[in-house]
Length: 498
Ligand code: ZN
Image 1 (tube, rainbow, N blue to C red):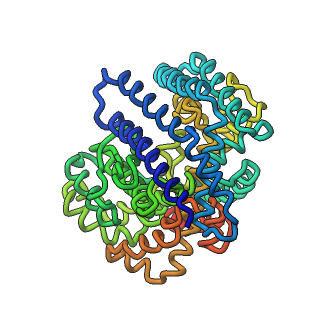
Image 2 (cartoon, helix red, strand yellow; image 1 turned 45 degrees about the vertical axis):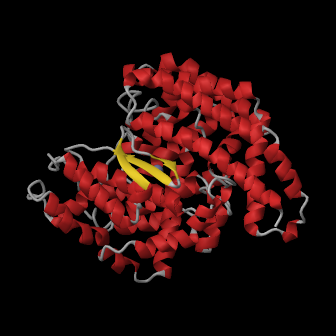
Image 3 (cartoon, helix red, strand yellow; image 1 turned 30 degrees about the horizontal axis):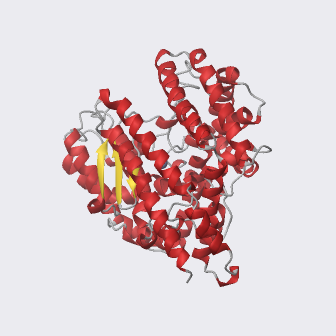
């Protein structure tokens, strides 16, 4: 083997650790940071980001790549080819973007984020619109600089899900929407509603204990990670020390539990990436869509199954007997699977959720494509809401101002959530086909067989395959909305039969 592989890996691990520092600073910011220290933290982030960029572009990696690219391709293993391809991809992008452009982008992100936070609080889109317009322009300029003048939105999507395009996503989403609408009509038409207001006064300490117990049983290694509290749950840190967060409400215990299971899904992916190649693309997630498929699979396919609750309900009642005394098993399960029309994406259930994503995809595609102006966003949002979700937001806080993503320039990110949902259902079907005893093992609280299968089929490969390539390899088919639609029908129609 060429010694340059080793040198490359060493240097990549160095950069990875630098980036990890930024990730832990972010975790600390979300979990611990005193309010008055935010400015200090911004400066620290800037230092680390600059150092990491310098390391990546100082010529050393470019030299190694040059040497490695001289090797005959047919003598390289698939992981070696992956390494070269992915490092080249990162380096290309990083070296095309001038340092002052990156600095401008970072500054704009922070400015635009604060403008968004204030506008959201004051419900005042107009005050935020000029900043958002600058952000859109800047991201389009980024696409141009990197060489994607023709299709800037495709470039943004590819950053999150390698190999995906807006045209492919549109095709998938149109089919998904076509299948969801009649299902939602049936659910809404049943007249059945589920009242969650009875879930009250759940002790926070006991909730945390239960969440930790569940995460541990699913396979989360607390020896290489933690569960803490933040306003918005997330999974950060690095693969060797995964930091996930959740949040707790006395009167909404299902939120903290399912947020925890969701983040545990992300965490299990990170903890399952191969240790020997940490810091290289061989130990990095394929992309956001596949990452999200892992969290959704554990949260929804597993966590909302009757099998899962057959195992966990007795323990849940042991901890919360008094609080659950008026709620029988069937009612509890219906609460877990309740479906409502909700203007807010993050409060939305798994049936309605994808419509929220389709709405955002259609809008950002027009926004980046230049056929929708930022100032017209609220109106377009409300019109699409009525058309797609069947409701009109009360105000912009419930509408166009609800998400943080665009303020941070994260265009092309939203589709990953629904790509993840589709992949999760597809993986679930294959996992059960290949492991006929899977439902039984879940009923017995044994989650290791599923985790083992995911480790072997997904986690061990890092970035070796592109999003759709991986799905094809594991399931024998390209990405399709049909498994998701089939799963949703099987789970929800029996619960919502008029
Ligand atoms: Zn997630």
